[in-house]
Length: 80
Image (cartoon, rainbow, N blue to C red; front, side, top):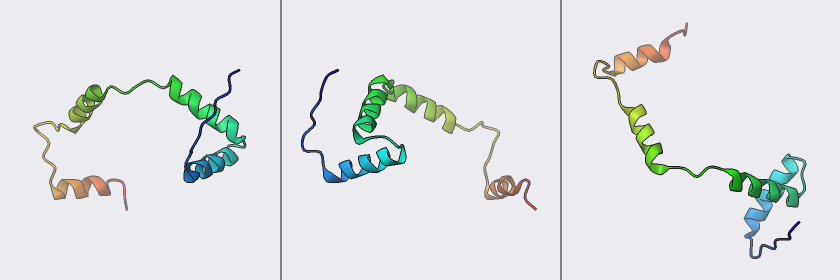
């Protein structure tokens, strides 16, 4: 296995890493390796596709008119 040295890590970052490692019952080294593995296996986001999906979700059907009365009714459905 290779060895990697990272210099000049800000103290707050080291502190958070140590806290996260302790919460996972891992060593700091193993925690950092886990994060590196996650990040190198993650799929890059397609910003255009994500924005297109968000715009599609935000579109409302023409027949739906959200008024204060409708919103109040929707919020109280199933409540006593």
